[in-house]
Image (cartoon, rainbow, N blue to C red; front, side):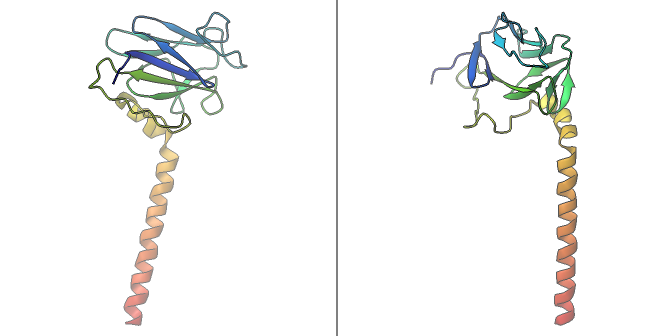
Length: 161
């Protein structure tokens, strides 16, 4: 299997392949390699670069921010396929960053659909946990309700027996 080292930047159905060593600007200006001429997107909103060992995403002092897992970031390492929102944490423009392996033995898993949940790099686990706090709380309450219901059923069966 032939693998190309680098980073794939996906936006609005297009893909930009970024080889190691290149810096790519994402923004509203026409000279941005990933051009997003939308309200809320700064001229030079963000950039991605390879720092010699990993891909980095950097917000370039944009007015409305760069968000990963609902949290505003200034700079972060991209270790796995990552969904990024520009301009707003929920309604911002969706950009996907997908690092590619430099060796064939480094597997990359790409879901069949672009809108599938993105993997979060291990160093961003805390950010992802905080962003999913409401879902976690809802799941805990559902589990508590199921345990209470089970206890009621067991008590009714015990009384009936």
